[in-house]
Image (cartoon, rainbow, N blue to C red; front, top):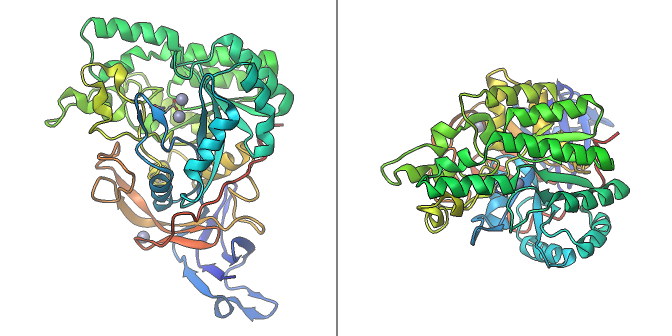
Length: 478
Ligand code: URP
Ligand code: ZN
Ligand code: ZN
Ligand code: ZN
């Protein structure tokens, strides 16, 4: 067993910060001590195998990205990051756990979809990983299989009010699944957009020749995010099943969540960095020499980027402060332009949906600290502690405390990170949705269960370092 001491840093939690040393034995944190402490008379720095000097730096629990889609089959292709490349990129960016979505489709057994996802991930991940279950076909068989997920360490499942013909569930199906969730303690995650209406709007736009990526954002109107969010909230109210709305982008959807929470409902929301920084006009509407107006395909994702003239981003940052939105994930679902996004040249409906950000979430959210939008503690809470609690991993993950896994990031507030292909880019994509972003701050050292996997610009981990995390029921619910 290797022993490690992190000295001289400021340990940051969701509730405070203090100068402290962190002692690690093997994979586990065993003590958080006043700086320079001895332990039973032993000078720790002289007694341990490795000393990591964190002077002037923040020592934070490793990031937990609770929404990724490695290798997701979508739109006639598959997300370009494998579990190997995607989790390695995550580690580079200070994320030490992902929760990916195992897929079940109509007619497929949940157990088979899940077993396939285990095959894809096992032995390939750089960091620890858990699964949510996508229920893409709600029927008697999948409903009967849901309770069994808990013993598999999967305590949450996602349904889609969008994507008719793919993953779509209608209200009756959602009702039945939520009834199971209410009975078992499973957490219902919802893609809340009115898919049937959006598909008609998209068809009408394409019929008028409006085929550029920009119109993906026009078709996916905020009204249909607000409406679906409200409908999901009422179904949650009716059944008593707690609700977690994924990738919230419209301020009106946030207002629905706030309203439900004020009424005492167990309703939660997640947003993603793209909804805090990027817009319909500047990204989906972008044009380049290489791609013309198809440049915007790089940012085709659902829910879509919203108009910068409607106050969504301002409202979203506010919701992060007021806890109307509880956490930030990436919805990492990367596709290359070449051979993937280009499937939708001439028809935005055929562009595979998704943005790749797993590598940059910690840096991008730290900019909220730099600009005074959120506190340092809230940064840790949004990116690590709440994801751990929400999805039943807290204690082992999401905190620097004795008994926790030694998943730790040494973050340098005086450092700098230039994002872009050929710079800090490790995701398997031929472009970056964040090209040119200059970050105040730098991920210096990353430990995954006590092993240093990233240090000083070098990757020291290996494929297969990451293990499956069996999650318990949500610890965020009263
Ligand atoms: O555009 C997105 N979000 N792609 C991934 C699938 C989903 O809806 O989360
Ligand atoms: Zn979704
Ligand atoms: Zn997603
Ligand atoms: Zn540095």
